[in-house]
Image 1 (cartoon, helix red, strand yellow):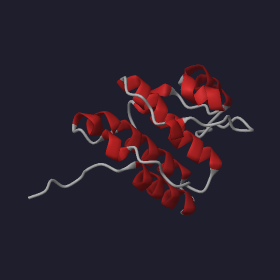
Image 2 (image 1 turned 180 degrees about the horizontal axis):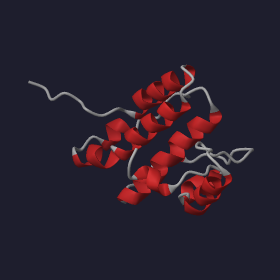
Image 3 (image 1 turned 135 degrees about the vertical axis):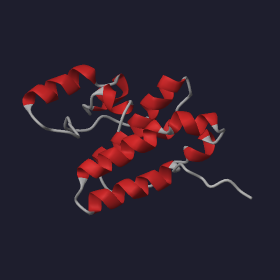
Image 4 (image 1 turned 90 degrees about the horizontal axis):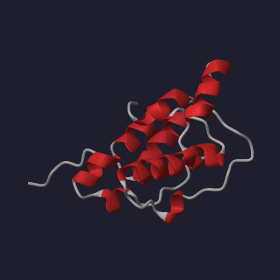
Length: 132
């Protein structure tokens, strides 16, 4: 009997994010993205990292495509793994905060964003990668 797969490949994750964005729920899209990224260490432990890291199609929004790629890059660096070349993205034309609550949170996100996200102009507190 084959084991049921409990994790998403990056194409499957991108498809789920796209569905949330198309429904107008950016918060759910971010939770979906973070949940998928935060599963990478467990996927690696099970020996399926190469399978999971297939390059995804676009989610339909350059900012979200960039966030997905650089979030994967960040998480893999944290794990001591070499990220796929497709996770290296050009900086966005305009800075982007996936979560905008108030000015204080924006400053906090700028101060605590991982280097991979800062490099492309995305600001999201690194603590988002420890819980989704």
